[in-house]
Length: 490
Image (cartoon, rainbow, N blue to C red; front, side, top):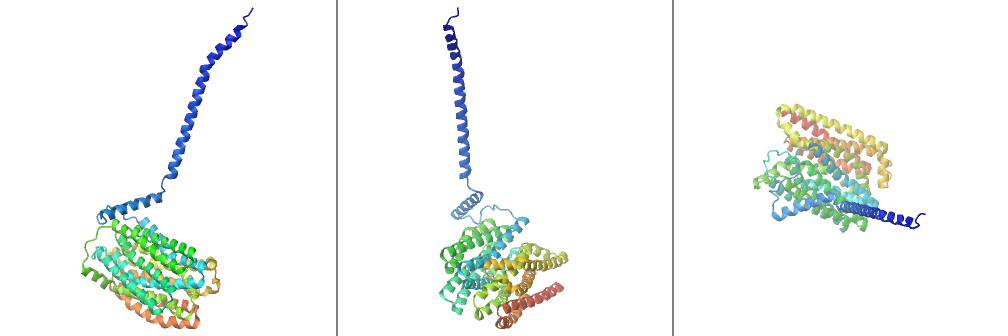
């Protein structure tokens, strides 16, 4: 007979045998759980590290700030190690185009923003202040940028260029004060002019440092400087105007933001990334004033000629016409900017080509090529405006520009002439024959006065555009004949 306790004993033995297996299973499960928890913890720590890791932009800003503070603390601007390389043609083109695009696009964007936020009349006031500031900026620049960057042998020290630029900026500020006093502007218009003129003055001051970067074959850094200043001023002006609806305060925001970007960006960038200048001599400063005077006079006269229709409108037409004129002018301005993108990065190389007598024929080919490209770009802009450009302008400004179709095309042709004029001026400066331009612009100035005031008084806004076309047409003919004359005697 089978023992009844044998089954129980067997189950107890099986239980005792299974206990170590269960214990091992529990230990393995616990180990796996701890492993999974550890994996989750590591993943969480990695995720937190990624979330708290500074962005590339933040890293770049922090690095620049540390470098700037170190240089200021140890006074090592002149002996600091350069970190950014030179001779990067592709990068020069890209960043120079970005900088010029930001600089050239700022005025159109601001006029659209001002129009939408505070109305057409206020936008016309802002446009008038901005245009006048651009004219005064030619006094601040004194026509020295091309002269400076083409001074490949550094016959004048960079320190001398700096001192000369500070003096011309003071001249610009004084001229701005006289302008406002003579016109008897209201308090609001005076504050608007102060902010805009100050902003343009900082542009002129920054230009000498950006010219130094270009001279040392680091044009891309100059482009970054321009882009930073333009973007910061656009954002600050827009935010202040949006919050306050006060155009005077927004204009002062332009000035303040340009000072900040100059102190924190442009100035230290030029000092850290270019060789230390030798000490200036008084004769060098005098030489810059003397050598650049013909160009400075010519450029200032050109600015007056270019803006003469606007000055004629200020007394005869309401401020909203200033907005219409400038809006029509912006496609023409795009032609000037685009052509500048093409040839301005090559000014130093053009100077070197001209310095080689055996390469003169190549130099002529480059001139004809750029003029041909200018004509092509003008045709493309005219086609674009005919297809959708005028409708886009009407949408952005809230004004029906279809009524101005005829003068839009007239202004585009004027813009093509202006782009060619600017290019030929730069070339004549490279040839060191800039004094020849002065008498031509003086003649153009004399012609523009009766043309502008007469056509504006007879035909209003349309007359202003036709006056621009006539004035630019006269100048392009005069400069073309002058260049041909120079080449025949070279």
